[in-house]
Length: 84
Image 1 (cartoon, rainbow, N blue to C red):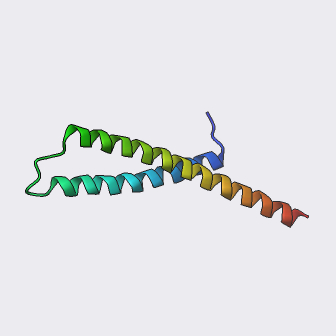
Image 2 (cartoon, rainbow, N blue to C red; image 1 turned 135 degrees about the horizontal axis):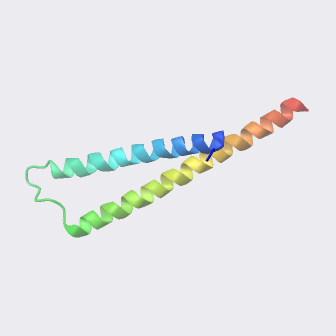
Image 3 (cartoon, rainbow, N blue to C red; image 1 turned 45 degrees about the horizontal axis):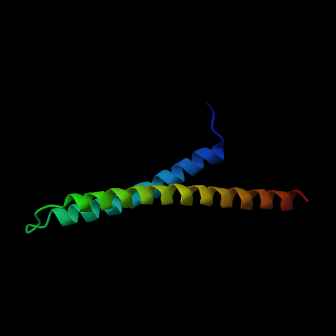
């Protein structure tokens, strides 16, 4: 299966955004767990963290796709102007 170049760029951008979001979430979880007084998170807290991670990954994918669509639109518009 061959993917269009814009699709590959979009996947890379979405992956980078998701990686940045997951890094921040992982840092927050590790910071909470490394507190000496911490007894660990409750099961409900882990459910909330899981939901936030899922929503963050969906938002990163949507933002990556929107960014690539915007860049493709601007590129096509600039190419049309330079051809005229």
